[in-house]
Length: 146
Image: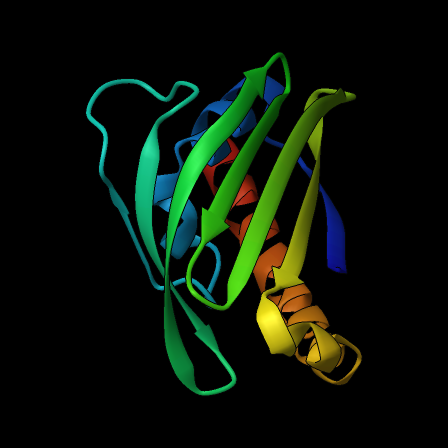
C-alpha cells in the first residue's frame, strides 16, 4: 500500500472548511491532479453518496468511482476504485485558533500484478501531494477572505 499525507493550516473556520471539503465535487477547484468530479447521488453528502472522478496520473486519465464510507464529526472518508487501484481518501478538519487544520491522507492499493510495482510508482503518487495541498490552502484561505 502507498500512503500519501499532507496537512495545511488555513484561516478559514473549521466548520466552513469541512463543509466545503466534504462536498467532494469541489475537488477540481483545489486539486490539479483531479480535474473532474461529478456527483452521482443527489442530496446532501452522506454515507453511501457516490462520485465519478477522473484523475491525471503519469500522463493518463484514470476514472474511479468513489463512495463516502464514513462521515462523522470532523472526518470524511471516501473509497474509490477502478480495475487497477483502490484509493481511500480521508479528510480530517480540526479547529486551529480561529481557523482550521486539514489533514488529508490518501492510501492507494494497486491490484493484481501491479502490487509488485508499488515501490517503483510510489514517488509518482507522492508527487501528487504538494500541488493538491498548495491548492487546498490557497482555496480555503481565499474563502476566508471573502
